[in-house]
Image 1 (spheres, chains in turn orange, blue):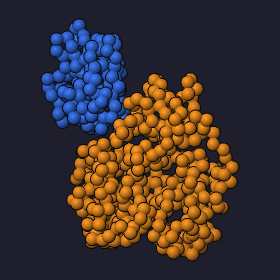
Image 2 (cartoon, each protein chain N blue to C red):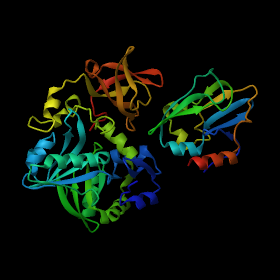
Image 3 (cartoon, rainbow over the protein chains, first blue to last red):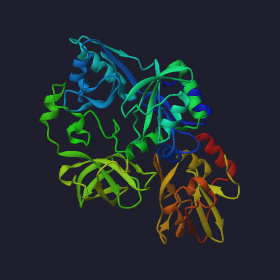
Image 4 (cartoon, chains in turn brown, blue):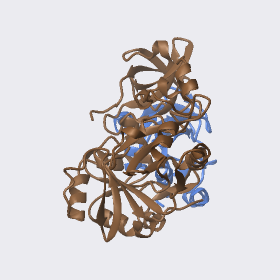
Length: 352
Length: 127
């Protein structure tokens, strides 16, 4: 199993380490997932997300190439800006969902999921032939930390002795942090204000320890999952997959009307099932794979679910027959043989 | 690992404590630690007849749903209703406030259960 440069720091903090996409990652620290979740909602949490892949696409043809290979429009990104995007396969499904950062006129940084890294890199390399650009996998050179929560800007401003007011959501810049030159972006996947910090691998431990010393609560992948779900963000591998047509999800805004790889299949398909948010009407946990019913008729299944640490309600995402996908619609989730009443709702599940 | 010796244990990590024909059941400190934050508990019905080894309750943590097995034969006499609103009591106080249910058993046969030392060996093997 692969380890991030922060492995020793996690062990020291008493993290419970688990296997995730070939990496040994912290699931949680001794205080537990709920407290970590609430630290991000109310204070500052710190995640090691170094397992994610970082791919640099550069060259005079980088913009044109990325317009073709990614569903969102890379040409709309100015230097120093980032957006959520997706990569399609040629069957009307997805290779991965990604974040794309424009770090120079002709240079982009694409962050992908750990489990998709090899697929993404080979897909990009294959399609880049014919474009004047190069695709380099830089995942092993950088660690990636996510400092998330309403207090993160104040904390980072104090530590980096800089003003971050001008750095808007999805903005990107460099700064000095604990002696290291890092690239920060006002992005994250928790639904809170926060920053993702790209750190050279050799400096990762120092930056991590410094942030923890300054009061950031170390958070593991468990809290990351409950936070992203509460915020209505999808997880590739659970909610999204190689057979997901993005136009059948709440993230269809990503798909811009332009030429792109996979376009014909994506625009040409209909959506017999769509991805929606659900709330259970009583306490319970709807988990991945649980079936959705309308009376005796199966109408879909849960793609991910948890109990919201903020509202303490059972929340979930699921793929459902589009005839039952209207907010307010009553359905039921089969939990261990019992049909538990639930309601289709708009996401996010909490006030942003 | 906190494994008090005033009760007996299932290999499946439940504890059972007998007093006056009533067996109180919960999960061990080791089990709650392995599960992580408990977010929901599905308790058996009062009056329900149960058999030793039968799954009668479910503890849901953020990560997973785990069956809880009855340690003895009998009838569910009482459930800890506090767990419906405060499932975290299982993490905070697994041996006291986090008890789950009581089985009334005319002659509770605890002989098939482990003592603290034997259970410690099981827990160490599972950790």
